[in-house]
Length: 253
Image 1: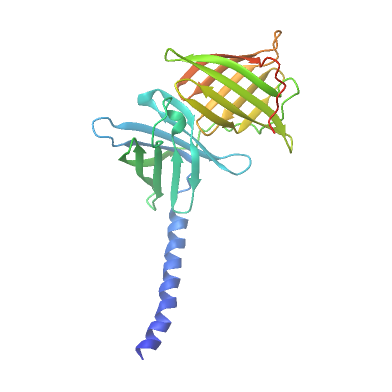
Image 2: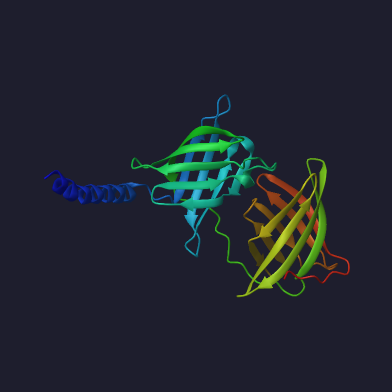
């Protein structure tokens, strides 16, 4: 008798659990939009504005504003959206690498909020975000190929906080028709970044590494054959001039 009751009851429990999960998923807020809140860091509350949207390829993208740190529009890295949660990194919002890298983990609640924690420097602070309007993420145009004039290796230097950093940029076209590349920055430490996004126009080029929110913007159609521009990382900008590496026609494999 008992065996029969249990046998019939377990499928009903499983069905009830599935219905509950489905109800929560349907009730959770659509993450697309502008979200605002305060990370409850003891003695130093941090206001946070997060924009989340889908790009033309229907992938989730986002950016963050940290008014107290002068950060505006720093791209989110490792953005993951599920029916129940939303996770992203804030690597690009800080010019100095932090270990472990700062990140946010949020649950999508049925009351229309996103609740969770900001993890920074080995500590965690409570964070509650509420939707305040439509997303204001700047959606980047699709990646393009680069011309033969830009393929190969480039070198340059910029200064940030009084410390010089040497830059080596390598660009190559990669089927189906978009460029890829690598940026190596040598300062107090050596950092190698993958170039995820390349847009070449008639005169200007933009290179983006989502890994660290590192961006190079410059004019490539110059009389002396250099790329005249700047590097941007979070709230920090610095002048950067890139020259074709001497004797280098090296392309990425």
